[in-house]
Amino acid sequence: MTDGSENASATGGVAVVIVAAGRGARAGQANGPKQYQTIGGRAVIAHTLEMFLAHPRTGRIVVAIHADDHELFRQAAGSQAERVTAIIGGPTRQESVRLGLLALKDHAPDQVLIHDAVRPFVDAELIDRTIAAIGENEGALPALPVADTLKRESAAGVVAETVSRSGLHAAQTPQGFPYGPILAAHDKAYQLGRLDFTDDAAIAEWAHIPVKLVPGSPDNVKLTWARDIAMAHQRLSSGRTHFPDIRTGNGYDVHAFEPGDHVTLCGVAIPHEKKLSGHSDADVGLHALTDALLATCGAGDIGTHFPPSDQQWKGAASRIFVEHAAKVVRERGGRIANADITLICEAPRVGPHREAMTAALSQMLGISADRISIKATTNEKLGFVGREEGIAAIATASVVFPGEVPE
Ligand code: MG
Image (cartoon, rainbow, N blue to C red; front, top):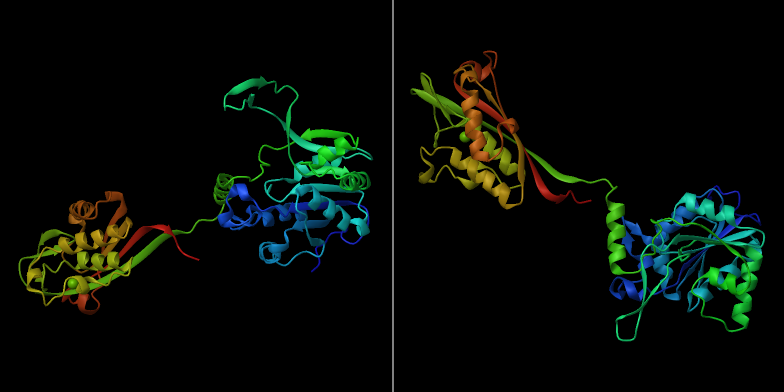
């Protein structure tokens, strides 16, 4: 795989050591080491690695992983750019860094950035600032002034003293160094058995390499606790695409005319020289809507719930069917977003009754009138509707269900 980096094979330039061998006991072992936990759909370390791979100034990247994590790293990092090398780290952070620096020897970089895998929110500007501050024999440390008042605890769990925070900074990574001097400092510490340094700036300090402070970033947090992982996930998820579970159902119904004196359409009785024939009140609009609602959650159709063979629905007001369908939808957590009914008939005229129909439907569905549409059209004298043998209705309902459409 090519990665387009001009620095990849050449010597010199800026190399990166990413420390990822920790076991992450503090974040909760149950979910495995925190650098491999998923935030915003990808492993923490994948986010971190991406920031350095995307930076135009970085060349060779060495990742120090734990011997048990080969598969985890492979899965997390995917097919790797050629300039990324995974090595087995040591038992301590300090030793992992030393091994990472040694692995860069053949590439002889001019400068090296040393970064914690569990700081995935490092940004390009911070990397730039750090690189810019590295001198020939001078390191660079991104840090933030300590904002909280500091207390030293006595043995009994009470405050022993307030520590002045004046001049105090919290150290972040990446810490940048000229490659030769920091490798020499690590080697010397290793030879002398000084294995208690918690960061590379401390080793530099010990080896009398000056370290220049550069402004850190408040976003560049170290994911230490289980809660940090959850917050990082939330932060990355807020920008991601959502797939709300919006569903649409349609329904169609026809009823024939027979002798009578009124029709019931969308819950409203309209005087007419015929009536619609049917088991119930034959409200063709409400029947179509019942089917549309049930369709949004795969709950069958009106016949499934109210078999025509069942005598109890004889002459029933069809609002019973609509209200039942709305209840089925609600029981599944659904919220009805809108309902749209088209009545297809030559007569009676629907227009004068539209308002009453809308009010009736608003009640049945428990939604506001602006979410209900009732339209009517003739059939231009064509077909059974055109010959005034019956009325047809088409309905559409949209319902939003909880959660998201699964992948
Ligand atoms: Mg029907």
